[in-house]
Picture 1 (cartoon, helix red, strand yellow):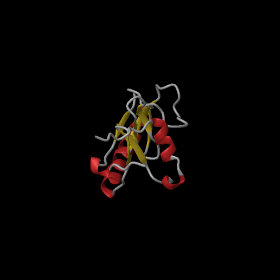
Picture 2: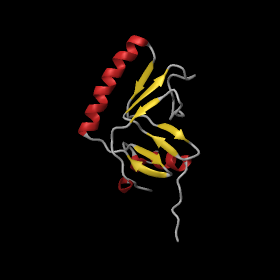
Picture 3: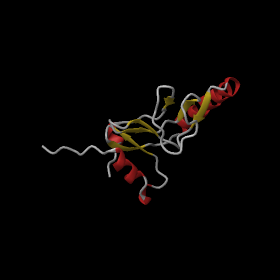
Picture 4: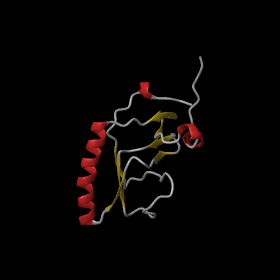
Length: 124
C-alpha cells in the first residue's frame, strides 16, 4: 500500500513561493496543499463582518484585523497554515505587525467563510 508523503512547513513555503503559484492563496491543511477559492457570498460576508468589527475595535482599542492576504501558522508540528477571510489580532502579542506568517495564538480569532472539501485538495 502506497502512503502519500505529508508536506512540511518548508515544503509549503517552497511550493507557495514558486513562480507558478504567484497570486494563488495556498493553505497547508493536514500536510496537504489546498488552494483557497474565493466567492461572492463569502467575500460579502467577510466585508460586512470586518466593517462591524473594525468599528468596535476603533472605539475600544482592542487590536486589529487582517484579511485573506496573510496566513497564520496554526500548528508547525501538524503542518497547518490557514488563510482566514478575517482575523482579529489582539494588541497583547509582543509584535502587533507581523513580517511573515505569525504563529497563531490563543489571543487571536480567525473566521473562514469558504467551504473546503477533501476533493478540492491539490498537491504539488
